[in-house]
Length: 221
Image 1 (cartoon, rainbow, N blue to C red):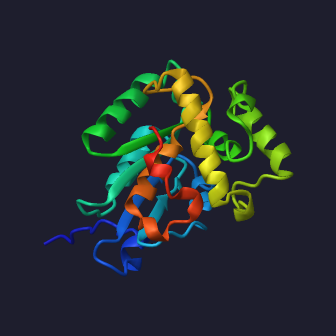
Image 2 (cartoon, one colour):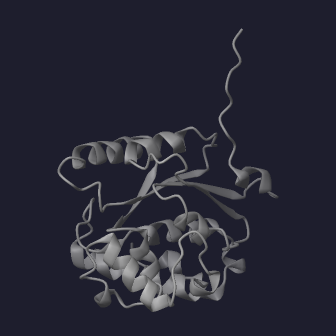
Protein backbone atom coordinates (compact mmCIF):
# COMPACT_ATOMS: atom_id res chain seq x y z
CA UNK A 1 0.00 0.00 0.00
CA UNK A 2 1.49 3.39 -0.94
CA UNK A 3 2.24 5.81 1.84
CA UNK A 4 -0.34 8.58 2.28
CA UNK A 5 1.34 11.95 2.37
CA UNK A 6 0.11 13.87 5.39
CA UNK A 7 -0.71 17.54 5.03
CA UNK A 8 1.76 19.80 6.84
CA UNK A 9 0.62 21.09 10.20
CA UNK A 10 1.10 24.82 10.80
CA UNK A 11 3.56 25.70 13.55
CA UNK A 12 0.80 27.56 15.38
CA UNK A 13 -1.04 24.30 15.98
CA UNK A 14 1.82 22.96 18.10
CA UNK A 15 1.95 26.21 20.08
CA UNK A 16 -1.64 26.02 21.26
CA UNK A 17 -1.95 26.07 25.02
CA UNK A 18 -5.74 26.09 25.22
CA UNK A 19 -8.40 24.26 23.25
CA UNK A 20 -10.03 27.52 22.22
CA UNK A 21 -6.84 29.16 20.92
CA UNK A 22 -7.35 30.44 17.39
CA UNK A 23 -5.07 29.78 14.45
CA UNK A 24 -4.76 31.94 11.34
CA UNK A 25 -3.05 30.27 8.37
CA UNK A 26 -2.03 33.04 5.99
CA UNK A 27 -0.58 32.26 2.56
CA UNK A 28 1.02 35.05 0.56
CA UNK A 29 2.64 35.72 -2.79
CA UNK A 30 5.76 37.17 -1.15
CA UNK A 31 8.76 35.29 0.17
CA UNK A 32 9.76 37.62 2.99
CA UNK A 33 7.83 40.76 3.93
CA UNK A 34 4.51 39.41 5.34
CA UNK A 35 6.24 36.71 7.37
CA UNK A 36 8.79 39.22 8.70
CA UNK A 37 5.95 41.60 9.51
CA UNK A 38 3.64 39.26 11.44
CA UNK A 39 6.18 37.16 13.36
CA UNK A 40 7.07 39.72 16.07
CA UNK A 41 3.43 40.36 17.03
CA UNK A 42 2.34 38.28 20.02
CA UNK A 43 -1.30 38.12 21.08
CA UNK A 44 -2.73 35.89 23.78
CA UNK A 45 -4.69 32.92 22.43
CA UNK A 46 -4.12 33.83 18.76
CA UNK A 47 -1.43 32.36 16.49
CA UNK A 48 -0.69 33.65 13.00
CA UNK A 49 1.21 31.24 10.75
CA UNK A 50 2.38 32.87 7.51
CA UNK A 51 2.99 30.55 4.56
CA UNK A 52 5.40 32.38 2.24
CA UNK A 53 6.25 31.73 -1.38
CA UNK A 54 9.48 29.75 -1.43
CA UNK A 55 9.58 28.21 -4.90
CA UNK A 56 9.07 31.27 -7.08
CA UNK A 57 5.44 30.44 -7.90
CA UNK A 58 3.59 33.50 -6.64
CA UNK A 59 0.44 33.50 -8.80
CA UNK A 60 -2.89 33.49 -6.97
CA UNK A 61 -3.77 29.88 -7.97
CA UNK A 62 -0.42 28.65 -6.63
CA UNK A 63 -0.85 30.60 -3.38
CA UNK A 64 -4.30 29.07 -2.92
CA UNK A 65 -3.03 25.57 -3.66
CA UNK A 66 -0.20 26.00 -1.15
CA UNK A 67 -2.66 27.20 1.50
CA UNK A 68 -5.03 24.28 0.98
CA UNK A 69 -2.17 21.82 1.46
CA UNK A 70 -2.09 22.68 5.16
CA UNK A 71 -4.06 20.63 7.62
CA UNK A 72 -6.65 22.83 9.27
CA UNK A 73 -9.62 22.55 11.58
CA UNK A 74 -13.09 24.04 11.19
CA UNK A 75 -12.42 26.98 13.48
CA UNK A 76 -9.09 27.90 11.89
CA UNK A 77 -9.10 30.97 9.65
CA UNK A 78 -7.59 30.64 6.17
CA UNK A 79 -6.37 33.80 4.45
CA UNK A 80 -4.51 34.83 1.31
CA UNK A 81 -2.48 38.04 1.08
CA UNK A 82 -2.00 39.04 -2.54
CA UNK A 83 -0.56 41.99 -4.45
CA UNK A 84 -2.38 43.35 -7.47
CA UNK A 85 0.54 44.93 -9.34
CA UNK A 86 0.94 42.05 -11.82
CA UNK A 87 -2.30 40.14 -11.39
CA UNK A 88 -4.53 42.86 -12.79
CA UNK A 89 -2.68 43.02 -16.12
CA UNK A 90 -4.96 41.94 -19.03
CA UNK A 91 -3.10 38.66 -19.52
CA UNK A 92 -3.49 37.69 -15.84
CA UNK A 93 -6.73 39.20 -14.62
CA UNK A 94 -8.98 36.30 -15.65
CA UNK A 95 -6.86 33.71 -13.82
CA UNK A 96 -6.57 36.03 -10.83
CA UNK A 97 -10.33 36.62 -10.66
CA UNK A 98 -11.05 32.90 -10.92
CA UNK A 99 -8.60 32.15 -8.10
CA UNK A 100 -10.34 34.71 -5.86
CA UNK A 101 -13.72 33.16 -6.62
CA UNK A 102 -12.43 29.67 -5.86
CA UNK A 103 -10.81 30.86 -2.63
CA UNK A 104 -14.03 32.34 -1.33
CA UNK A 105 -15.94 29.19 -2.26
CA UNK A 106 -13.47 27.27 -0.10
CA UNK A 107 -13.99 29.61 2.85
CA UNK A 108 -10.70 31.43 2.35
CA UNK A 109 -10.63 35.16 3.07
CA UNK A 110 -8.60 37.37 0.74
CA UNK A 111 -6.77 40.63 1.51
CA UNK A 112 -5.40 42.46 -1.51
CA UNK A 113 -2.78 45.21 -1.47
CA UNK A 114 -2.55 47.66 -4.35
CA UNK A 115 -0.04 47.77 -5.82
CA UNK A 116 1.86 45.70 -3.21
CA UNK A 117 2.21 44.72 0.46
CA UNK A 118 4.57 47.66 0.97
CA UNK A 119 1.52 49.92 0.62
CA UNK A 120 0.24 48.38 3.84
CA UNK A 121 3.60 48.92 5.53
CA UNK A 122 3.68 52.52 4.37
CA UNK A 123 0.23 53.20 5.85
CA UNK A 124 1.77 52.57 9.28
CA UNK A 125 3.67 55.83 8.83
CA UNK A 126 1.92 58.04 6.27
CA UNK A 127 -1.58 59.45 6.03
CA UNK A 128 -3.63 57.86 3.28
CA UNK A 129 -3.53 61.05 1.21
CA UNK A 130 0.23 60.57 0.83
CA UNK A 131 -0.01 57.18 -0.93
CA UNK A 132 -2.70 57.82 -3.52
CA UNK A 133 -0.18 58.42 -6.33
CA UNK A 134 1.95 55.36 -5.56
CA UNK A 135 0.72 53.13 -8.38
CA UNK A 136 3.78 50.90 -8.83
CA UNK A 137 5.60 48.58 -6.45
CA UNK A 138 8.91 50.20 -7.29
CA UNK A 139 7.73 53.67 -6.39
CA UNK A 140 6.03 52.44 -3.23
CA UNK A 141 9.21 50.72 -2.04
CA UNK A 142 11.23 53.85 -2.79
CA UNK A 143 8.95 55.96 -0.61
CA UNK A 144 8.93 53.33 2.16
CA UNK A 145 12.73 53.26 2.09
CA UNK A 146 12.83 57.04 2.39
CA UNK A 147 10.31 57.12 5.24
CA UNK A 148 12.00 54.36 7.26
CA UNK A 149 15.55 55.38 6.42
CA UNK A 150 16.10 51.85 5.12
CA UNK A 151 13.96 48.96 3.97
CA UNK A 152 14.97 45.32 3.76
CA UNK A 153 11.99 43.00 3.31
CA UNK A 154 14.14 40.06 4.47
CA UNK A 155 14.77 41.72 7.84
CA UNK A 156 12.03 44.14 8.92
CA UNK A 157 12.63 46.18 12.06
CA UNK A 158 9.71 45.49 14.47
CA UNK A 159 10.17 48.95 15.98
CA UNK A 160 8.77 50.39 12.76
CA UNK A 161 5.53 48.43 13.15
CA UNK A 162 4.09 48.76 16.65
CA UNK A 163 0.51 48.10 17.73
CA UNK A 164 -0.06 51.85 17.61
CA UNK A 165 1.17 51.91 14.01
CA UNK A 166 -1.14 48.99 13.20
CA UNK A 167 -4.15 50.88 14.51
CA UNK A 168 -3.25 53.92 12.41
CA UNK A 169 -2.71 51.76 9.31
CA UNK A 170 -6.11 50.09 9.74
CA UNK A 171 -7.89 53.42 10.00
CA UNK A 172 -6.06 54.85 6.97
CA UNK A 173 -6.66 51.73 4.87
CA UNK A 174 -10.35 51.80 5.73
CA UNK A 175 -10.64 55.43 4.64
CA UNK A 176 -8.96 54.57 1.32
CA UNK A 177 -11.36 51.66 0.82
CA UNK A 178 -14.40 53.82 1.54
CA UNK A 179 -13.22 56.45 -0.91
CA UNK A 180 -12.77 53.76 -3.59
CA UNK A 181 -16.17 52.21 -2.90
CA UNK A 182 -14.84 48.87 -1.55
CA UNK A 183 -14.24 47.21 -4.98
CA UNK A 184 -13.50 43.47 -5.05
CA UNK A 185 -10.24 44.12 -6.90
CA UNK A 186 -9.01 47.63 -6.08
CA UNK A 187 -7.14 49.60 -8.73
CA UNK A 188 -6.34 52.62 -6.56
CA UNK A 189 -3.50 52.37 -4.00
CA UNK A 190 -4.58 50.82 -0.71
CA UNK A 191 -4.61 47.60 1.27
CA UNK A 192 -7.19 45.20 2.68
CA UNK A 193 -4.80 43.80 5.31
CA UNK A 194 -6.80 45.74 7.88
CA UNK A 195 -9.56 43.15 7.46
CA UNK A 196 -7.12 40.45 8.57
CA UNK A 197 -6.11 42.50 11.59
CA UNK A 198 -9.74 43.06 12.56
CA UNK A 199 -10.35 39.31 12.31
CA UNK A 200 -7.30 38.59 14.46
CA UNK A 201 -8.42 41.08 17.10
CA UNK A 202 -11.93 39.62 17.13
CA UNK A 203 -10.52 36.20 18.06
CA UNK A 204 -8.17 37.45 20.78
CA UNK A 205 -9.07 37.91 24.44
CA UNK A 206 -10.24 41.52 24.65
CA UNK A 207 -9.02 41.86 28.23
CA UNK A 208 -5.50 40.95 27.14
CA UNK A 209 -5.32 42.97 23.93
CA UNK A 210 -2.92 45.91 23.82
CA UNK A 211 -4.83 49.12 24.47
CA UNK A 212 -4.28 50.36 20.91
CA UNK A 213 -6.27 47.45 19.45
CA UNK A 214 -9.09 46.98 21.96
CA UNK A 215 -11.86 48.61 19.96
CA UNK A 216 -10.41 47.93 16.51
CA UNK A 217 -12.89 45.16 15.78
CA UNK A 218 -15.76 47.55 16.40
CA UNK A 219 -14.58 49.94 13.70
CA UNK A 220 -16.47 49.92 10.40
CA UNK A 221 -15.31 47.39 7.82
